[in-house]
Image (cartoon, rainbow, N blue to C red; front, side, top):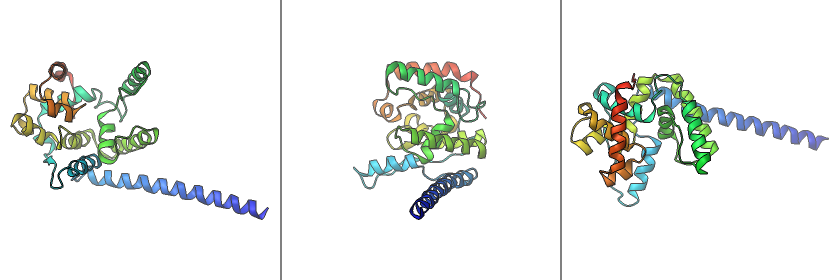
Amino acid sequence: MKRLARLRRFVVFALAALVLGFVLYQCWFLAHIVYWSGHDPEITRFMQMRLDRLREKDPRRQLVHKWVEYGRISGNLKRAVVAAEDAKFIDHEGFDWDSIQRAMEKNQRRGKVVAGGSTITQQLAKNLFLSNERSALRKGQEAVITVMLESVMDKRRILEIYLNVAEWGEGVFGAEAAARRYFGVSAVGLAPEQAARLAAMLPMPRYYGRTGDSHYLARYADTILARMPAARVP
């Protein structure tokens, strides 16, 4: 009986330790999000992973990245990105359930993961803290961080950070770096066609950054351009 009682106490203490560890881990995420609601992230987990990979070939390699405030990013790019990535960005609370349902049905038809249905907030959660690993645990953590982001930050701040940390080519991050790399202008000076082109690159930025023009990219950019007038941004 004493041995059984000790075993029960051990199980209770172990479970309590796991719960406490989980809570502290989530508090670590929340503390960063609260800080970043008023301070600009210098580098994200995803950016650091890319930099580490680039430095395997060139130890002196640096990312091309310059932060610009929300007002210094073209409204054309804001509308283009929302039109392309998350048309319901203004209205949802972090998750677009209709898009998630469509992605699940598409994945079932293909027999593999070909679509994700992630919102801009979900993508930002992954870029700030997580890896590209496809697992239920990673998606669960992404969901928790997404709720934190939507609870702490307003839509304007979420979109501002997203546009400043999104990948737009090999080692190219953020709207300012992308605008200068591909069009020789600042982020605030992007024309509608240029903004649509950058938004079309987001699903495969390193691929399109290498290949440049492609028929599919041009057609997708035209589709985004047509959707932009209806896009609502904060």
